[in-house]
Length: 271
Image 1 (cartoon, helix red, strand yellow):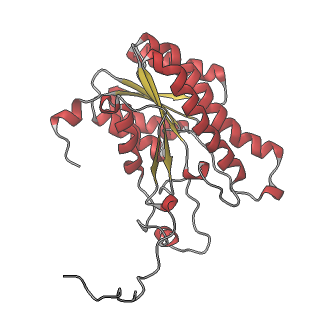
Image 2 (cartoon, rainbow, N blue to C red):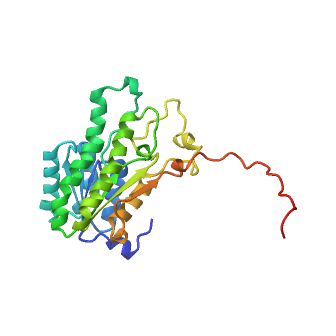
Image 3 (cartoon, rainbow, N blue to C red):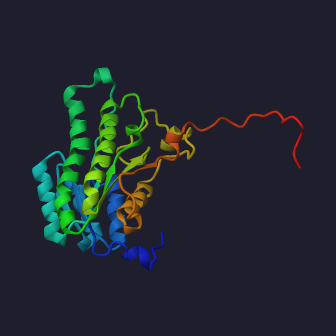
């Protein structure tokens, strides 16, 4: 991608904290943010990968070993952003875990683990960001939900429950934070080609599994990053409390069958 001057400076002086950013979508968002002139705090429990990414990104990036389930860990992550860059303007709640399992095989502890990371972690981040963003004069928060949080999927009760919750939290936060000039939106990805996407056990190529979708492939992390960064940017200044689906049309419905030979309307063709 060729970056023009406006793209390389659109986040000048802005600081974002991205959770779960050591790889996948979070890493793509961090790279795009720095390419846009901003500074980023990369947080994750994958310390080796997170530090490698920060080394790649240079002085505009910092890594924080961060457990999103823990309020004190959030305090340390926010403090690192303020100590390193002086302010916090944006937050992407990207960290998540995915454990497909039938409901009758699910355990309370495993179910709760998914809820704690995906939903409680997002709540703690939204709460922790309020004061530093208010001090900065406003900001933007993007919570990563999922199309699994907008319709039911078999074998995904814990994950789907958590992402439905993220959608509700997003709307509540948008209402409460709007008077502070803080926007809160949700992004709902479909299947994205990241380490979270399960590897086909039968050796089927990844994209072959999505042949039924209008756009018959898995999405790329960079495509999600483009949408997230738009919502973080000043270009989206009038957008809050909204949900944005990026799923190759999966949520719209199945890919249609070949067009049938429809009968000719009575009266023949129109001229």
